[in-house]
Image 1 (cartoon, rainbow, N blue to C red):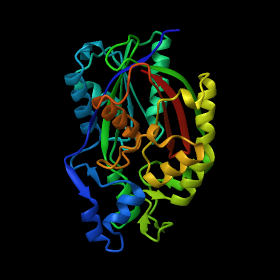
Image 2: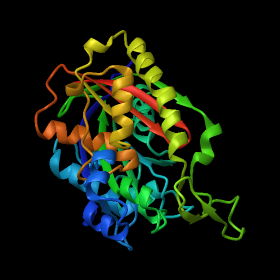
Image 3: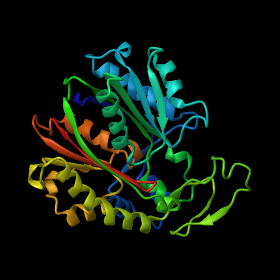
Length: 338
């Protein structure tokens, strides 16, 4: 079977920045220190009112082609686009991206709707396309504008989420990063769907009157807003992610000592440190890099990898375990061998 490699990652952050200081002015009961210490985020980037997922995806992809010159646009065989905030219900945003990026008309393109596990699932699709001989070079773009779903009075979610896009080149030859994608473990539990949801926008609520809710933090929101049951999301991750890590190690015939770095979906510092302690991961191996951008949903892992590579913190031969988990519920993990 053909091997698959991550050869480069680029990302884009919108220009607008919301700092802890500005949030603290809006919500005086939330101090700057409290936000930073508990959530691990100092600022988050927010898409402009006329900036959408496709716009950010284009910028991330153009940056990739500028930074990584071993592959040109004409070499891309397939475009995968992960988003939960598409430009339209239809057409597929991936088709729009193909045109805007000037990719060949022989390029395959599709959207898939996943959030915090989206990068992992995207890698499974890319690896499958390469293994089957359908593609040699897959461009995986992830982009989210969760800020457009969040009620302005929802201090919890506004503190956590930022907007971003990432572009990842997955190829059948080893170049650039040269990170081989090893075996996966995946999981789904749709019974938790209502604990992280935007009800408006789909067909089920298309003709319904806007409903008003009070979330678990006492914030008033509507069916068009992001509703997150924080305690239930925390319980879900605490229950499922330690087993996911162990199963992924077993699937790849490795143990914890073989892993040089762990990169989890950058949800928030409190949750991640809880997981780190529960799984007994050495602090120096556990990578947190969300303070400057927030929880960017399907792009968090890529941003960490790109930053670590930029700073030469991942060495040749290193094994890096990456894990994504959240909305769905959905989770997945794999190991990258650099």
